Length: 133
Image 1 (tube, one colour):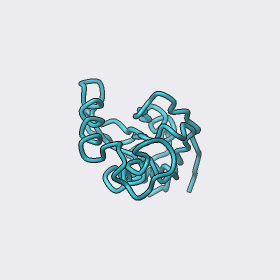
Image 2 (spheres, one colour; image 1 turned 90 degrees about the vertical axis):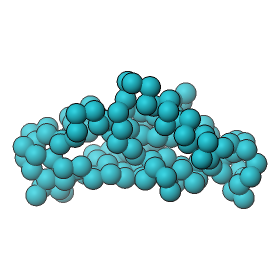
Image 3 (cartoon, one colour; image 1 turned 120 degrees about the vertical axis):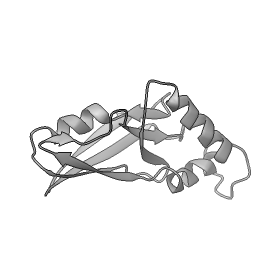
Image 4 (cartoon, helix red, strand yellow; image 1 turned 135 degrees about the horizontal axis):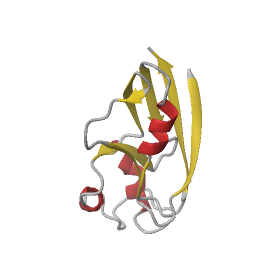
């Protein structure tokens, strides 16, 4: 297994497209599985279309499902921070992608996206691990 880690600053960004980094990591590796994991309790990894307003739709849906107010028992940090801790139940912290011939086998419009609604901690790590198949 081969692993690398990306370090990101998500200040001002609630989603970050990781697809280019993921594809670069997989390039030339042959067939296998690529695991993308965010080791944080308040972020997730999504497969989605970007560039067609879907990002805004995703963030609007998260806001409807997880409003940033005082309803949460988890109350430290910024107002509504408890919602950030519930996010990974809806946007999983990892995804496994097939790699065929050194290329990530994504669908035509699929992109790998880090979703991070936590404004209290903009420093994020994303771990990429390749297992040859």
